[in-house]
Structure formats: structure tokens, C-alpha cells
Amino acid sequence: MRGTGRHSRRARLQAIAIGFAALAAAALLGACGGSGSSSDHEPEGTFHVKVTEASFPTEQELGQTSLLSLAVRNSGKRAIPALTVTFTIAGKQGVASSLPFGVNDKQPELAQPERPVWVLAATYPRLHGSSQPGGASTSSRKTFNFGELKPGKATKAVWKLSAVRAGSYTLLYRIDAGLSGKARARTKGGVAPGGSFKVKVSEELPETEVTDGGEIVEVKKGK
Image (cartoon, rainbow, N blue to C red; front, side, top):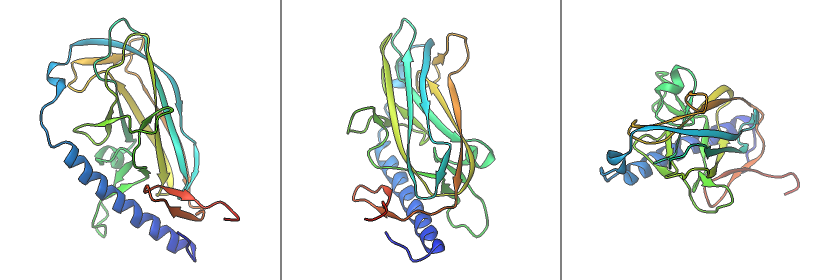
């Protein structure tokens, strides 16, 4: 996708972001059609985990695609029933949004208040080194379920995200051990595991194109 000006490229990025958000919502509704859930039989208790890696670039540009990586180890003696990761952008707009990487912007002129800050690429998240999707959808669009994690084992997940909204944001993440609230994840220190990334997305607009897989990628110079 080659634009002739800064504003036209920004408009196209925003249109693409809104379109992807609508497609993601439709896909989620289809995936969540069944109401049965193993969380009904989730064991109760505290499960110890340790976040061993957390990375996401702190300086980004509109249209830039970046990898967010999280690695978690089961540091307890029992299998974690369902290792989950939940994202939300800090602040009222982020908390009010149903998008994991977006905000709810209630400006009167906006027909769609849900505004992505980052667009998640198709087939992501993935487990590190895999080419297949690795996180099941849940009843909340903000939560990804990676299934059981046995004692002493670790897993690393990767999200591929394209920045589509400029500004400074704090992206929060929370790790849990189940879906019903019965299984609670804690660190060895007894606190809920999680963290944050402080990210600045600048208005610099690189030349971009959309791949066949729906990813926004930067066009390298000389292409």
C-alpha cells in the first residue's frame, strides 16, 4: 500500500484497523458459540508462576509491526489448569474497551467507539517457534488461554502487533491460572503476576503494505 501523502496513509491505516477489529469481533462470536467450558470443573487453589521474560518495544511508529513476548514458568508443584494472559490499556478508555489492545473513544462523531491502538496479526498469538495459533479465545476478547502447564514447565507466547494509533500508552498484562476464578496464580512472593509496557507510538508514517495474511508491514527502502 503506497500513499501519496502523510494524511492519506494515516486514514488508510485507521480504516484497516477498524475493519480488522470488526472481523476479529465476528470471529470471536463464532468461536464462542458453545457455552460449555471446562472452567466449570476447574480446581480451586493457588498456583505459583514466574514471568521469566516480558518484552515489547517502547518506541514505535504508526504502521510498524512489533513482537510482544511473554514467557511464564510453573514454579509450583501442581499443574496449572489453564494458563491465561489478559491485556488492557491503562486508563478509563482502555478499561472500558472490549479490545485487548485498544481504547473506547466516545467522541460523538465516531460511529465506532472501539479504536484499536495495535492490530493483532492473523494466526497470533503463537507459541515461540511455532507457525500455528497458540492461544485459544475465551469469553473475553482481552484474555488468551494457553491451556494446562505442568509443574516445572515453561511456555513462551508471541503476539504480532501493528501500531495504528499514535500516542503514549501503558499496556497492562495479567497472568492467571484459570478461567473461573477458582484457580489463582501467584508469585512466590504471594502477589498476582503481571506487569506493564510503557509505549510511545509516534506519528511518523513509514511506507506500508498489507500482506495476504492481513498483516501491516513496512516497505523496505529500495523495494
